[in-house]
Image 1 (cartoon, rainbow, N blue to C red):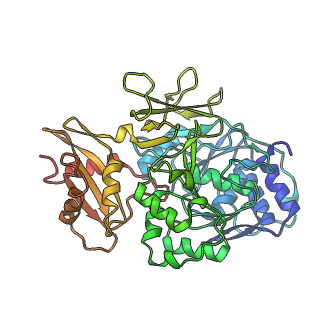
Image 2 (image 1 turned 180 degrees about the vertical axis):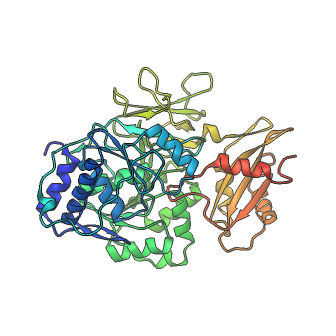
Image 3 (image 1 turned 30 degrees about the horizontal axis):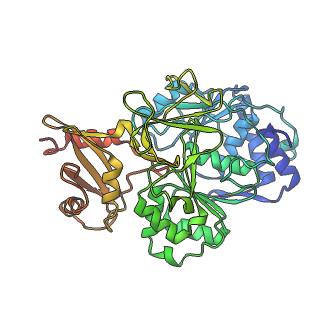
Length: 484
């Protein structure tokens, strides 16, 4: 079957198997027919509000069936969904809206912007059967980048709202799966795999947010076959007492991405799930290239994120602009296809004239062409000339049995330039900062150890595995005694 509009794909799902449940969430279940009906209702409301083809519509709703139906409505109106986290601060939200300039908003009100809501009550009988024009936007999504190193960017995909529902989207996203969605649907990777899956035969089981016990229960209850995780989720699953006895026999693939995964965590996860069922992908919201590695490959190349796939070319570039030899560290650059797969709204790209692009990550290649990601260039801490990767500190702290998650960052210092500080989430544990500093000292060489640790009792990263280091650094710099 040739590519067709997203609007038509959902209509055909409803016509082919109207009673098949395609979405299961806390706010309700949707059959294919119900999803089509709700999508049409949203589309009509958006069109009545002035939305036209290729307009952006900001969708800022919590995880659930309502989010899915709203996005389907945006596509049916011929527009592009611009997913936006409901957890952003007011200033962050305003900054994104200033860049995106959406024609309409779903989920919140903003001065000078038009908010669209569905009318209460049921639509009239048969109203959803009146066909809308078969419209498709020239861009199928416009998510924001994580903003972990600064102001978020709106990433307008170059790919149109067209898809062949009979062809797998990627080697790691099969047709006809039961997909467990535990990350925020407003995040680019979660959004992409959830909706691409839904359009190619998936049933989505959506959690409001990640909870290790609910995740384990959902896999068993719904016979989940495909799931996406980030390292923070993997760490929390392995800490859950129930994990060892959980029924996970239905799982065929667990994909993880989003941030560097500590080798010890990855090894333990592979031991639990089985290496043949685990795939890791390295990519960004920009879709400018990707690498992939299976669990059994990883055991032979520990710490790697794999080799390029999907037509991706890869190089690591040293500070002097020359290609790094195997084992040398540099900035990771990728190239995929002749045309750019995205463009930023209101910001410039680092993409070169000949198509090479970078996410700003530091890494190296081995002799077999496997890539190893060390950290983001913008996050590297310079302590008296010593370059320290935050991931190195975080991986050590998270080996402590009391630490559920950690984030390391640099704090300005008059003598050293920067000091190394960290925040550790210990949940309900009573471990002290002094104990964690002593633990880190047994695993890290002098000069690479954290100068300070602050204890918190709530998750530091969001369910997409992202964190705002700059915010934590600014907070630490204001605390008495932080700077020398």
